[in-house]
Figure 1 (tube, one colour):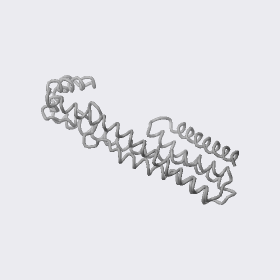
Figure 2: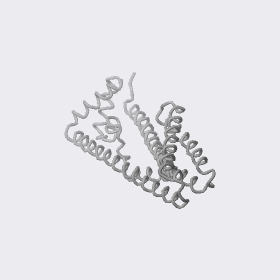
Figure 3: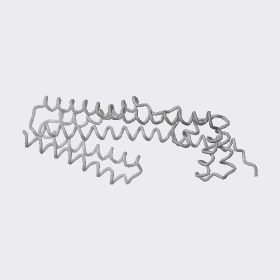
Figure 4: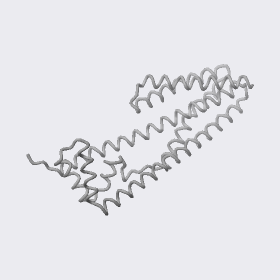
Length: 240
């Protein structure tokens, strides 16, 4: 039976494109969830410490806003540096593969042929797909297949930094607003309860995206947040 290698190749590329787009969206969502989670925990720990010291509402607001802005800048800056390093690596790989495809087509064919054999394709199909890619100078497919790099969607450090920055601020707003707007007799208890509930949500979502037991991840996240707030409150009480 004859196999239409071009049709098979196009179908395979469509499946690869779908998986890569889905992976990119999940990575962005995971980063946003973790940024918001960090904003909730770190800001909650600081404002609970200030609350434990029985300081004024103005002091609480100043401490919370300072923690929110400095934490968001730190997270955004760290994300920018991390993604910039990854993008530099991606660019180096792109240049190397472009040079190999331009100067050594036989070597590029052999590399792709072995790649498809290792993935379980029959020799005939692997050779047809490798020939199609190399003959058409299809660098995009080489990069996507061998390195999971999508040429038209290289990592953007500014976008990643901005997403982390704003996600952190959104997360930090929860404990900040609770500790400053709730009346004094209830502010500590309501803030802790609100933070724990939200941490269950971010922990559950993060665990689902990471394909680990969701309930375990959510409970662990809640425990970390609770310990952070309790320790902050105790230290603030002792100092105050």
